[in-house]
Amino acid sequence: MTQQPGFQQYGDPRYGQQPVAGPDDRTPAALAHASSLIAMALSAGWLSFVGPLVMWLIYKDRSPFVRQAAAGSFNFNLGLWIMSIVGWIFIITVIGIPIGLILLAISFVLQIVGHLIGTVRATQGRTINYPFQLRILR
Image (tube, rainbow, N blue to C red; front, top):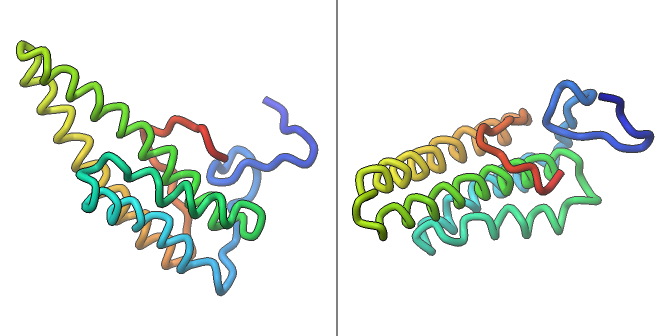
């Protein structure tokens, strides 16, 4: 796969260097990860993608490091949000309750663990490549 001129994808070592965290980039990047946990607690998990989306919109042209953090967090949340919806569909069908509960539990645990790790790594100036990403934002 060739890289287009002027296009650099952050967060994937196959596409060049990782973005470097400037002195003012660590706090907004950590907030991009932590905002998902805050929104998850306030909305029972349904709006966990809003915080990273807002951070991406604010910082997409300012800081590659914050943009990568917010995009990764948003994409990860989107994948887990879809997993939660599928889990609820299984629960509604009654016969799929065990599968639905497992999917919801996996989604819940992955959101908490993933975003805590992302927040800690961002405060250290390091990036994270989340699993289960639907790469919508870059």
